[in-house]
Amino acid sequence: MKTGASKRLFARARKSIPGGVNSPVRAYGAVGGVPRFLVRGKGAHVWDADGNEYVDYVGSWGPLILGHADPGVLRAVRAAAANGTSFGAPTELEIELAEEIRFAMPAVERVRMVSSGTEATMSAIRLARAATGRSRVLKFDGCYHGHVDSLLVAAGSGVATLGIPGSPGVPKAFTNLTVIAPFNDLAAVSDAFARYGDDLACVIVEPVAGNMGFVAPEPGFLEGLRSLCDGAGALLIFDEVMTGFRVARGGAQARYGVRPDLTCLGKVVGGGLPAAAYGGRADLMGRIAPDGPVYQAGTLSGNPLAMAAGLETLRRLRAKGVYERLEACSEAVVRGLESAAAEHGVELTTGFAGGMFGFFFHPGPVRSFEDAKKSRTDRFKTFFAAMLEQGVYLAPSPFEAGFVSLAHRPRDVEATVAAARKAFARVARIPVAAR
Image (cartoon, rainbow, N blue to C red; front, side):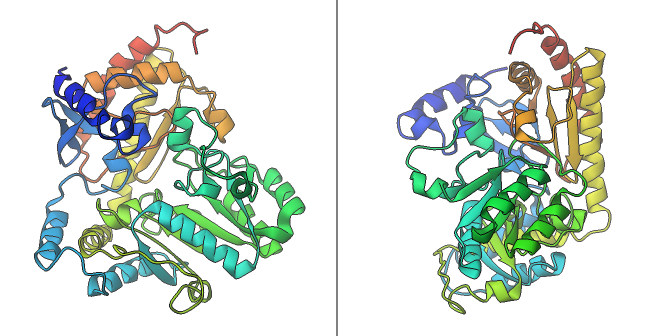
């Protein structure tokens, strides 16, 4: 496999861009080798600067649920661009996308558009603090909610990949207001409420964790969070930036039947362009300026190109059988990986929901970040490299979920499983004592 062009581009990028990338995990620090510079995508496939073709399970980290360069999305974006790329003024497209979200998610009675998931979580927490008059926020170890100062502690995703506990530049006073509990541990959350309940503004959670790898909520966990918040007068925030419109049309809140007070969305709602949103109960959202005193603004919020891409995507996801197809594809991938791993005696724990999946080099169960960190990172590194060499593009981190799209076909899954058999053979040669 040729890598010369990517190597040259990476060397050039490092002269102008920190680490040569605009988001840390892209630098391949956890897996070694040179990051692939991509030049084109179509359907379930991407091509790099050296001309190598890959079956893609990153999907721009989740947004591309229809696949790369979907013709309908491209038509919608071109039509919007022909009328102007940005106005900084209201457009009908904003209303239509907001209505599409509301109709799919009954808990989102009002919604405000923003440009990134970080903006969405930051704004939702500000609103929760204003509504409750309280200061503390409870989050879960290994859940990532963007690079908000007070939430960049015990975060998963890129922070976990880099092996750092948080980030310099975040004042201790900010993180002092953040309470941490293990994911799927209701007893720990209950203890936190007993200690801080009078000052807990909210609990924020990825209802299906995807930033410590794929970790599903255990039965009763999300329901328990709802009950604890209700009992203490705190708000429940679902960070569905990743799960929204991906694990079900109504998100994880529909899949698991738990209604949050506030919801954060991103990725799929922008159809591959920069867009995100936060929303919830009308009485809470009525506190947002200009209706209320809680200030939040953004020059490019509701950008017409992003609204057009998101609207086309969400409308297409209304089609009958869409989520059954996505889930069947995710299941086929993980069952294939399980079978291939078992052929070579490699311990593997997998999971999936809708168009989202993950795996750990660990016998399981994996129910928290502490469990996830026990996964064999040396095995993942070897597996990742072997899969890449055979044309399968996975996230370059053991702490990220994978994504399928409606463009993935059975032949793509078959090619993936065939590659996995060879990759697991290489993994099996790693000494048991190695870590």
